[in-house]
Length: 45
Image (cartoon, rainbow, N blue to C red):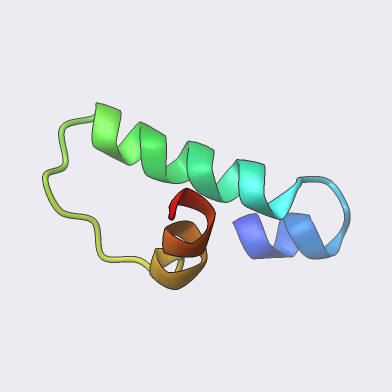
């Protein structure tokens, strides 16, 4: 859904990706498996 919204120009890819990962962490996840792993690592690294 995030990628579809990005393709339609409704969301910024990087901001939506980081917010999604942040909310999962805030919910208590210790490990996150995601297609966003490499792009997130590039942004945070």
